[in-house]
Length: 249
Image 1 (cartoon, rainbow, N blue to C red):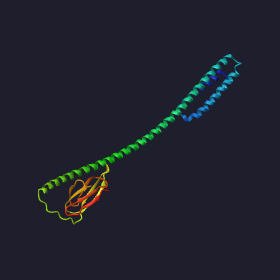
Image 2 (tube, rainbow, N blue to C red):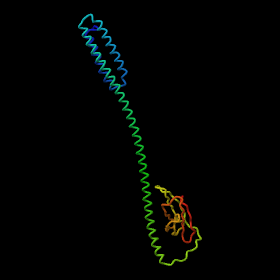
Image 3 (cartoon, rainbow, N blue to C red):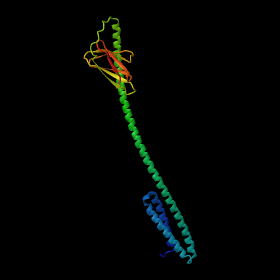
Image 4 (spheres, rainbow, N blue to C red):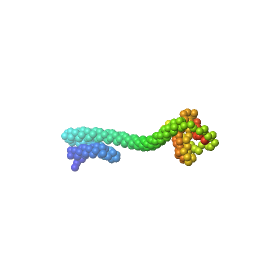
């Protein structure tokens, strides 16, 4: 086949069109082959340049060949423009892909943060459930104390109608032990009073000189006195025993 013939020119133009189409597809699907595509573009450009040189050489041979060469050159220029557009689209696709990767990374970070928040909320819910269980326990204890206090009130009313013997002078230490526990909710304290003796013990408790709270504690049992302020002065007394003075802390 003679170089510069119409068939050779058409074959060159066809080759350029195929290279351009393949290049556009490869740029879209495989960005890793972009360097190879550029090499092919350089080769295609070189081939087009050679074709134009051959056409210029044959201008003197035939006017018809000049017309065909002009058409081929225009078509090659159009293919080059299309190829440049495809390259621009490939660059834009790479930019969009990079943004998508960045967005995906950010979403993963947000997901991890959300998981951490969920774990924290679950921990708070668990602590809240534990606190509710303690509140229920305290409510049960309060109901028990209310029942015991009602019994003491009934007994006090009965005792008031009957003359009482003179109180025995306190000569013995009050057989109790006490501890203070700060409430989970708020700043109040609960005093746990334990009867260290084997017999029931009736005691009177006052806080900062306030109202007297009376209670009877079974032998070895513990009774709670709640809603005590930090630093409050507590006085525990019982007939026949020395008075115990405590400080909430």
